[in-house]
Image 1 (cartoon, rainbow, N blue to C red):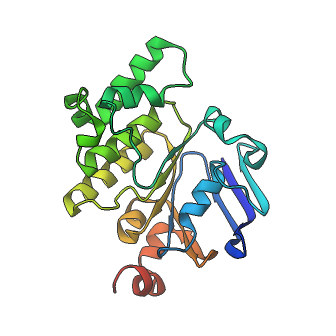
Image 2 (cartoon, helix red, strand yellow):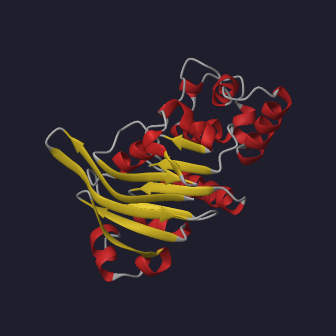
Length: 234
């Protein structure tokens, strides 16, 4: 589904991504782990068109995303759940969900999608009239994810969904990610919580200072001594 080949990204003189290549197959949950500053968020921003690559290719179902305007990439079935959630704080939960459906014209389908989001996130239904800025961090993450789901995406890009959450909420968010994957949504997950990410992913890539250092079956990387030492606190 998603194919990245020899991707290079620069911020001025800084070479942020160096010949990065990775693939995410239809129905897979793939995680990209690495330390702060490794280039994980830059990778997602380049996929979703927020950053233009210096060289290399990014394709979704054969469509060249580098030649596709960022504001139309969502029409191809790609939705981005950003780092830091970025909910519309002065809007209600319901208004945020409607904002996620801005590309849709079918009101019946929009209402159907809202019910689907509420099935995944019952807490959002309870707080549907509440201002998003008054939600807890975990609830805002649920809302950011639900907003992305409103577009009926074929693929979700998720950037640090566990950031700033308590251990209990981290477990809840990862259970939801696993549930979405089992429902058939393809996911590329960027995470600093390597243990949690590797525990639910099919495959994984390790990004170090802008380059892919390792890749393989997630369960195998979870047991790899180099990964344990660098990312799992072993």
